[in-house]
Length: 120
Image (cartoon, rainbow, N blue to C red; front, side, top):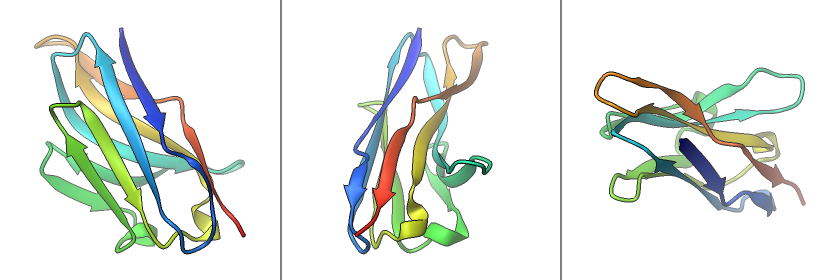
């Protein structure tokens, strides 16, 4: 079994910072791309940031310059440092990872989500 467990969400004032973490555990052979997505009620889930093959990164235009994605391969953990938070960043944040459980078997796994609320 593979699990992704997120942590670090909460309530923060506009302009504040939060750091999200997502740790993968279980029967893992290798992990490829890891990323963060977010969703608000009534809207589709959207990409926030992704780290590709542990090297290159992509960000949604709305978070460029404010959010930073990083990864610790030894801990099988991906992070999202969120600075200068705005009310429109309020959402449930999910992590996703492309995980292989054997040399020939793999798929995307999702975490359970963590709520981020930006409000004064």
